[in-house]
Image 1 (tube, one colour):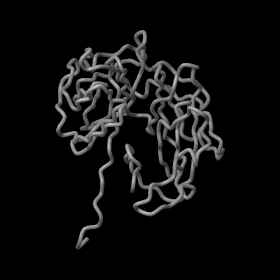
Image 2 (cartoon, one colour):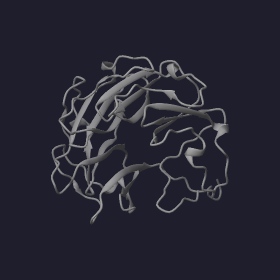
Image 3 (cartoon, one colour):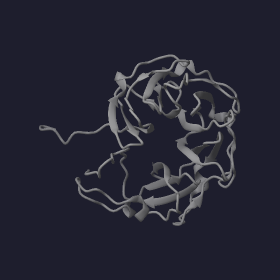
Image 4 (cartoon, one colour):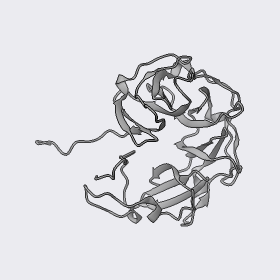
Amino acid sequence: MTTREEDFVKDIFTASTHDIIMFFSNKGKLYKLRGFEIPEAGRTAKGTAIVNLLSLDPGEKISAIIPIQNIAEGKYLLMATKQGIIKKTPLSEYDSSRKTGLQGIALKEDDELISVKLTDGEDNVVMVTEGGQCITFSEKDVRPMGRVSQGVIGMKLDKDDTVIGMESIIEGSKQTLLTITENGFGKRTELDEYRVQARAGKGVITYKITPKTGKVIGVELVNEDDDIMLITDTGTIIRINVAEISILGRPTQGVTLMRTNEGKVVSIEKIAEEKEDDEEGK
């Protein structure tokens, strides 16, 4: 794929022409396309801008993309907002063919949808704030709710703090939790350090915030062979292999991953493993 300047591939997934691609916006709306509705292009093409495929409102942007084969029973969509709200809704509630967008969660005026995960209702949930707090609780503590409901409190926040990330942890996972700050610091932490608590608490410290590190801007569950892309507000992008990032305890400030100079890291993305072209003899 050819990309524009300062653009990059964030994720890669395989889908058939009849699969459903679910797009969730920061305003809490769900848009759906079938695989065949996304224009097919050559290997080196730039692709089509998402605004040309979906009827987004001004200021609306996509927060999550989830491909599914069908509206399966026993599956849930787990949603988190920046004000600490968590919501679990049966996937079947979103079985609609509306093209103009479907309300996926009711949001307060100052709130936004930041993350959506497809789960089986049995996982643990971790929520992290920009102030370095983190809470882990069982998804079973979140009762299923209807599509247009607001959700329940997942995490109580200090004044001026906001949730910047939510991850769903499958039991027995060997991943680590990667945390990155706006001044280019980061670390990985073992999941065993995050005890499961009751929902709606303040959680525990997961990152020691200092003026040197700045606020937390992103978290990801990562494996050793993953790569991470860090993007600054000045357009600088670097790519780092996860194995090169130190594993440190929760109440630590991490290590320098990127020198930001006058800029700030504004986003991190886990890069899907790139598959080489077919090798000879295969």
